[in-house]
Image (tube, rainbow, N blue to C red; front, side):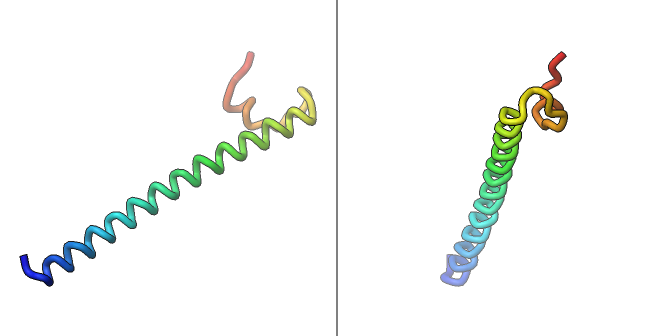
Length: 64
């Protein structure tokens, strides 16, 4: 394998790993954001009491 082919191969591998890292980063940020929203919603409902109508958790978990 020539130097040019090695350089091209290394650049391709670096580009591929960067794109994988970006996807993993976005996925973890979405998970953290969703957990944060649910935690804030839970805490707000805890402060407001059981009479609060706008709750995300009640829509996610249907309690009868």
